[in-house]
Image 1 (tube, rainbow, N blue to C red):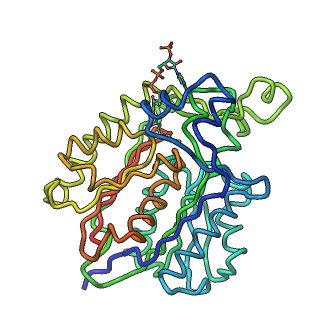
Image 2 (tube, protein in one colour; image 1 turned 90 degrees about the vertical axis):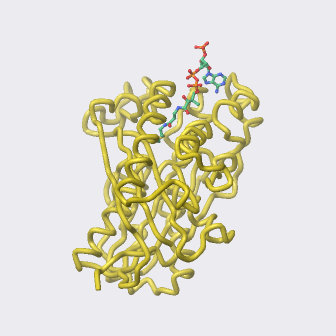
Length: 327
Ligand code: ACO
């Protein structure tokens, strides 16, 4: 029997503090109407001063462990997809490993921006298929509010803080991850980036004065590339599995912009009731958005045994990725 990997537990966590579009109207020159029309976002969550990415990640992970019925000691590897980890060193996954008491787990972070969770699923799937590990905790966790320029109306309306986690286990049943598709184009890195704090622009008085420690985005260009790329990606993914769009029970897209999501659904001729959307409540939470949406779909009974579900994401790098699963 062929070894496969399957998600056996999901969990998510969003900080308590809600920041609405009306709150943003008081901070920058924008309106609820503009944000709703252009993005679909109504509100987002903001981490408290005492919460870092690993704190959100641990909350989501505990729920994923509970739903899979697994103790932390059984975890072989922890991967945290994030661009807003606690510190550059150690990895956020190391903090999670310690806070959960997952003493048998390897731990590292993965940066593929908004595609990070799907890159992580491909990594988990590969480790399992190679026979190296049996139980993997994969997390997407972001505290983007700390890297958001609250004076820049073109970006500060978009992002939010959250975490989602899944347990990926080795299985011999005919369900689970069917295929993973990963892509990148680094020549378009400057559509979405955070220049400060790395080895190119280390922190200095000048870097702070120049506001380089915040996310920069060419929104409109990113939007156009995202729509084109994702339309092609979902068609390719189905073709690779000899499937039709109508075979899909659910599409779980990265939650960047409702108009991008609608364009992908239209390309697949999928009605919106088969598309998971939660960006109205959480905004764009980068690597956390897909596991959050997945957990919501599982807990509300939208995803059932043997359903085919397509996950897709596009983000900084540029990176883009998709995963097809039989639930
Ligand atoms: N309120 C009011 N007006 C605004 C705001 C705002 N918050 N922000 C920008 N505007 C103005 C602009 O200044 C511009 O005005 P001008 O015409 O006078 O110059 C006008 O609105 C149009 O701006 P655009 O940037 O062209 O607006 P667009 O329709 O493209 O929407 C948005 C912007 C929402 C950012 C959209 O481009 C988008 O969602 N882009 C893709 C985001 C994405 O997918 N990112 C990748 C994933 S994220 C990740 O990896 C972390």
